[in-house]
Image (tube, rainbow, N blue to C red; front, side, top):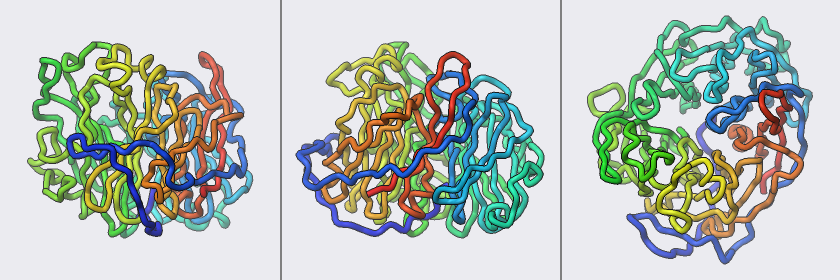
Length: 475
């Protein structure tokens, strides 16, 4: 639930290899400056027996697109499902207080890794908001009593502090949804983004909480339009977000990829229909949307939504042949420029992925895609193999240095001073035994320069395993 950025500006240099469709491709080295380090501060256990099963190549407690760990007012909050399938909410006083846990009445309804838990905080009334257990189904929503997170030291951590499980946002019905995410907007409005419809035929929507009342803002992306590749045409799709992030001046940034509804547009049926990296931004908290050049391309809850046919949306073109993953991650630097991590199988390995999971494990690579002050997008390949199907997370420190948390909790870093060309592996994940994807606390990076990573240890079958939080000082 990142708040608007307050990072310091720093100078940047870059080394340009060439230009591909408007994207400058920057080679990863030789290093111009030393990449920042990370210092491990501690590793604590939340639950020795967290729920464990693998579906869609993921674990429900640690799908990286969920906001399962957040910080506010000197306390940190985390959420997961324990072996009984009950949702658990925990807190600790930072930097190293003991974790306190509360088990909610809600139990996970199905073995689907999409049904993760996301947390949000509304500062004006001090409530913790919990969205969970949804994949093309109605939300399960719980909110705490007022003041619980604004005055945490004065409140006991007990189940009675949380309200009943609802299938709406306090009476505001949203219908069937997937990927619930909270974001704090300027003015302390808590926003809620979610997808309606299904994979390949869905739309993104927004709702907003003003400190007392939820209201639905409506759809802002479209499923309509035509996209052609490999001799076929698709007429439905959905937008998969790499994030919604507020930056300096209150601009809301959204990088994304499209997933097509017609699998015939792939070069092989074992691939993914994901294609291209797109970008839009909003200067009015999600009411209207503009492309990289500033052209209006969509108005929320209107007849003109952000669509695949919108002008100037693609900032890094890629056809649906390379196993491009959806919903990776993004951050925004102190100058208001977005940074995105994407991953796929580069063309030097194949021009047609026939099994996206195995191909990504064998040859997948992550890329740092970022915009400079002139509005030009640049891309650098990270020099560490994914060795995994899953997603990575990117965060920026106060000096705009970049840190990418790869699957298994590995951390690679690059300095802004080098133009992000000096990518270096700073932590290899040793000792974590993490399953794959991890969840990061972006709010704590912003507030005190510490990266907290929520991870679950690998297990087998349905044998429960420990879920833990490891902390690193950045820089």
